[in-house]
Amino acid sequence: MSKPARKQQDPTLKLLTERSSCRNFYARKIPERVLSQVLEAGVHAPTGGNLQPYSIIRIEKAQTRSKLAELCGQAFIGQAPVDLLFCIDWHRSRRWAELEQAPFTATDSFRHFWISFQDTIICAQNICTAADAVGLGSVYVGTVMDLMPDLRRILRLPEGVLPVVLLSLGYPRTRPSPRPKLGADVVVHRDWYRELPARELRAAHDEKYQHFGFEMKPEKLKRLEQACRKAHGAKFARECVDGILRRGHINMAQQYFGLHYFADVMPAHNDMFLKWMREFGFGWFRKWRPRR
Ligand SMILES: Cc1cc2nc3c(=O)[nH]c(=O)nc-3n(C[C@H](O)[C@H](O)[C@H](O)COP(=O)(O)O)c2cc1C
Image (cartoon, rainbow, N blue to C red; front, top):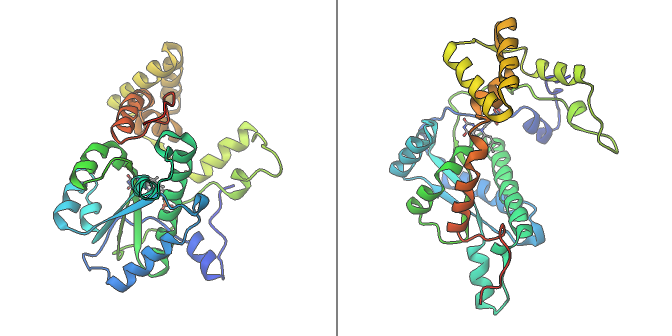
């Protein structure tokens, strides 16, 4: 079901279907003219109400890039000549509203939060595609979400500016082949949502991940058992482990949801994120009281 993208003739379609994330960069600087073009392409992205409630922190100082690489545990962040941090930014809009004597409640509104999150990502993706178009490589870094307070301090982010994602950018030393994806036949539903039969659903994922299995090392098995038990109880955990012992390997879904994104830990982080949201000046998750 997931097949290699059809060879495209149209240069834009070719760019979009043959792209891949790059994690290996030359130290070579990106000429200002090239980087400006790429950044300009970002700010032309669609944005709710044409408001552009985002900012991009362009990080080029070697010391800051190294610090981020260390904090994220991902060396390529330091290797890339430029890292772009995409942030929701209601601070700039608030200041504008104040200057123009306009009422302003955007940071207390989930609607505004939701749209600004999308605006930020759409801008980032325009930049990502523009970077590919001029021969640069890039990779998103989502783990910056665990570093919100550090980023706030290091990058001097004011209240209302919330880091969303980092994009490391540079000239690629190597460019990996495009990774297999679920095909459009799996993710597109015509006119209404259709449940894929279990057999097809599994086949599509097996094809995407090429039946990849992970060795059942005792410590991994123990960690997975714990995640299963905490998330769904002892019976589920036993059945999961029995299945692995029968099959002889940990499957891709178990690896993803049990061991990579620990199922027993992820939801426990919610309180921390809500606390940070408050500290960053957002209040959409509590009962609204006008700030006078
Ligand atoms: C929101 C988001 C966060 C990501 N975070 C990371 C990350 O922290 N580290 C990393 O190496 N790759 C990260 N990636 C890149 C993905 O791993 C990559 O897009 C995926 O494996 C598919 O590969 P491809 O981009 O080459 O098609 C992220 C991608 C997205 C969209």
